[in-house]
Each structure stands twice: as structure tokens, then as C-alpha cells.
Length: 177
Image 1 (cartoon, rainbow, N blue to C red):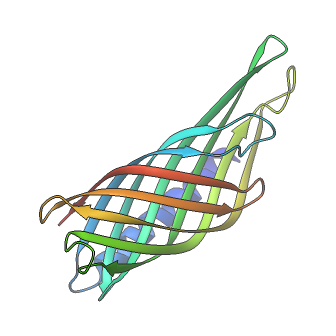
Image 2 (image 1 turned 180 degrees about the vertical axis):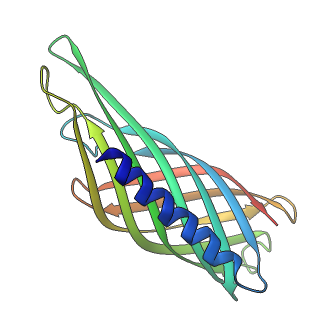
């Protein structure tokens, strides 16, 4: 079951990246962020993680995106540590909003898409580990400040509309090519 799920997520990510490459022109972006997420598992507490993303601007201000994250959470209860791991793949669109009147280097964005999440956690002391694949949506926004023509600093906030929905915030870097 886990191998099939991992294969499905990998195939979806590769399809997204390959489909973006078919476009004839546009900015491509690789993005990396460190994230904090609100409680997403059954009372396991807040989660911390990383995200790697790829975007391709297929039309003026419209970017197709694929973002793969890894979150980990744990809490101590009754003398034991309960842990959870969440690996969401988000496929969607980002709309870029340049803000030249505020600062010519600043671009805001809104984004949304579908989410496939593989979750693995231990819900209680003595309980067996549980794995599940969940489907949902993600919606959010953020901003990028261009440090130079290729590098930018990124911040974002997203709400994951999924079973045990959660809010995440990230800070990181983007590279444009």
C-alpha cells in the first residue's frame, strides 16, 4: 500500500514537472522553505517541516506549481513519545501580483490547488502505527522579495483543506532560471 502511494505521488510530481517543460517560454522557479504547521494529527501538537517546489510561468503572471513537503510532529504523553509524519504533494496554480508602487522588488501571490497527503502516525500509547492517504485542497498566499534577478526571499501562508485540516507558514528562498 505504501509503495503504491509513493509511486502515485512520484508519478504525479514528475507529470507536473514534465508538463511545465512543454511550454515554450516563461520563468521557471525552484523554491525551498522551512515550515511551521498548526496541529494536524490527533492531539500530537504542532508540526515542523520543509518544502521543495517547482513553478513554471506558463502565462503572464500565472504559474503552474508542484510542491512536495515533509512534516514531523511529536509529543510526550504517559511516558511515551507519539510521533507523526505527513508528506503532502500540492499541485496547483499561483497568480503573481507585482507591487511596483510599494517596492519594485516585491511580488505578492495567491495560490491554490489539490493536495495528496501520505500520513503516518501513532495515535496513542501502545497503538499500532497508522498510515493513510488523504486527498484535499490547499489555498494560500505570500510574497517574494527579489534579492537579485535570480534569487528571492519567500514567505507564505497556506490552509490545507483536508481531514484534520491545518494552517502552515513558511520562509525560504527562490531561484529563477
